[in-house]
Length: 83
Image 1: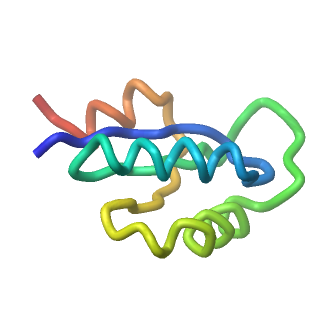
Image 2: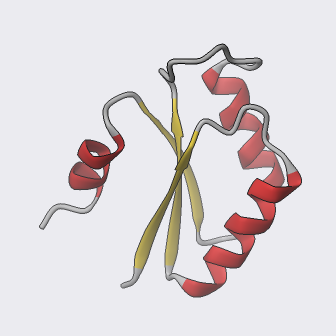
Image 3: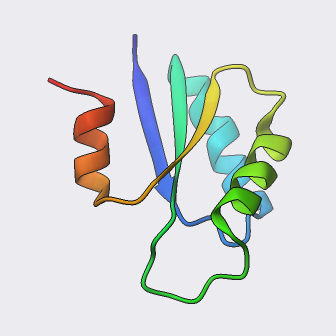
């Protein structure tokens, strides 16, 4: 199974994010959209609001899941796809 992670803050979610995710979902068996919940910048939306927006925008794509994370992206990826 070919899997991929699409990490970001997604604040706010926009058509570019949706386009990239939709295209990536066609290339991989499963795409995990990983929302970083502790960036060093001011956010417009709370983590759960961003998650809800992405789930609503991409709910029609069956091989996409949306999760949140707070550690370094490399550490998240290591736990998400252990060797």
